[in-house]
Image (tube, rainbow, N blue to C red; front, side):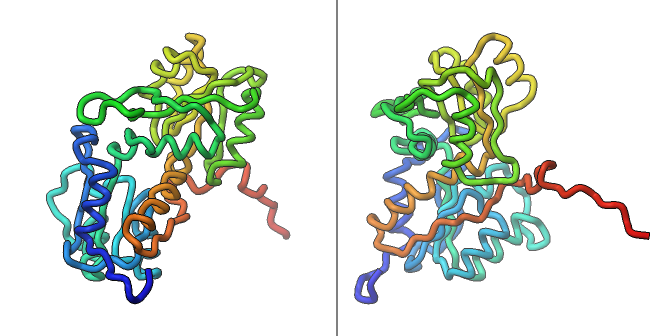
Length: 285
C-alpha cells in the first residue's frame, strides 16, 4: 500500500471477507467472522494463518500486523473466562493490548468456490473440479461444497502419487502416508482440506480412485478399505489447509490494497517423526 493510499479499516476488510465467505455458509456449530478488534482501526498489514496460536501471534506482532485472518476459530467452544492465566485468555489479551484484530473463516471457506479444497486440489494439479459433497442450504449452487473431485493429467500409481504429494504440499514432521495397493492406478482423486474421514462413504459413492485428506483414524480407514473403497492418502491437517492461505492472501491484496503476509509457521501439533530420531549411542566409558 502506498503512503498516499487510504488504509481500509477493520470493518472494510471484515465486510469484504463476509462477502466472499458469507457467515450463513458456515455449519451451525461453527463460529466464524470477527472475533475481536476495533472496527475503525486502519489495516495496513494482514497476516494469514491456519491457527491463531501463541507462535502465530508472535509472528503477527513481529511483522506489525493490524489484522490476523485465521482459518480455525479461536473460540469454537464456549469458554467461561478469558482471564490472562488461561491459554485462550493470554492470546486474546495480547491481541487486544497490541491492537491486532482477529477474523476467522472456517467451514464457510471450506464450502466456498474457490475455497480451501480448491487450493489443495490445485497444488496437486487436479483438473475439472467438482464438489465431493455439494453444498445445501444457503451455500447451495455454483460449484460450492465440501471437498473436491478432480482428475490427474496423467495416471499415477498410489505409491507414485503419494511421493508426488510430498513434493507439492507443505512439509511437516508427520509426513504423508497412504493406504491401499501401492500399484493401484489412479486417475481421479477426491481431496478434502482438514479432517475428512466423515466423508469416506462419499468418496466411495463418487467412484474415485483415491481420497486425500487429514486426520484419518485406524478403524474407519481399515473398514473403508475392507469394503473396497478408494485408496487413501493421509496428510497432516495443517498441510492440507495451508495452500488456501495463498489464495485468500492474493485476493485480500487486490481487494484491500493492504500488505498481506502468509504465515508458514507450522502449527501441526506433531513435531517428531520416529524415523527422524537419531539412534541412541552408548555412553563412552
